[in-house]
Length: 312
Image (cartoon, rainbow, N blue to C red; front, top):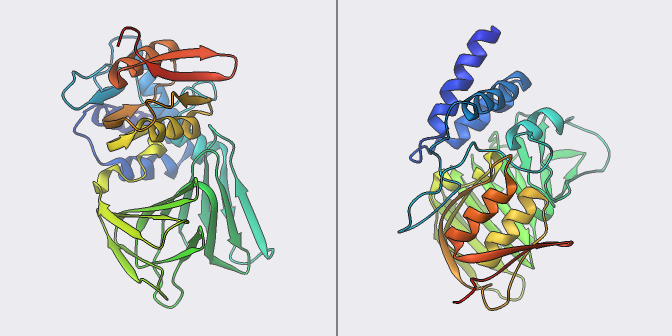
């Protein structure tokens, strides 16, 4: 494909992604991952836009509040490299069909990695995560901590399985996100279906459904989730419906690599909305984020601290 064609496509994707109604994040990520040149062109499109006008996509938009405007979607860690660009172009890892008994993929907070398996399956690993693959059978994975988005090529004769927190799930032709943190496992399905705990509860999760299981309980909680919001962290977009501020801070820590803590009296406060992490102007972003979350954000040698607004 010619450079001019790539630039035109990048500009089109940039324009579409700026629309708050845009929800085709999977297709955008697929396009970014096809060729490292796509990542560079996409970043260049946003950079060029910054020189002429301010983008319309909200950095953070809480329900019932006016949107806050941003320059572009990407992350602030890593010197201006976009999330999808970093995952596809910098930390791409191709796994063979057979290899060592165990292969470990690990990321630091603020770092992402894309793993391409020989069967065409792709795994996007978020920051602060550890994934173990069986080198003798690449259709078997274990998420020890963190978060991963799986885009699985279905094979009825060789189902793809993921272990997380001792719970096993089997792919039935799917795109799904698995999160393992604080002794809790969460699974959200964007497309297709997965089967959780096939030898026990045998819970089937279709697109738009999510499961939450705590290690301390036998209870399996199942709820609804917007399919288009599953795995959007890959492009720097965090979507919430009634999430606690502690959860928001945890996601920001994993995505950006910045330490972010929440005052105990605010940790359980609920937030519904969308946060898009920009690549530059960190202070301005934090000011806007504090406004939307209705908190003050203080900075210190150990990172950032979310606390109650002064006078409230």
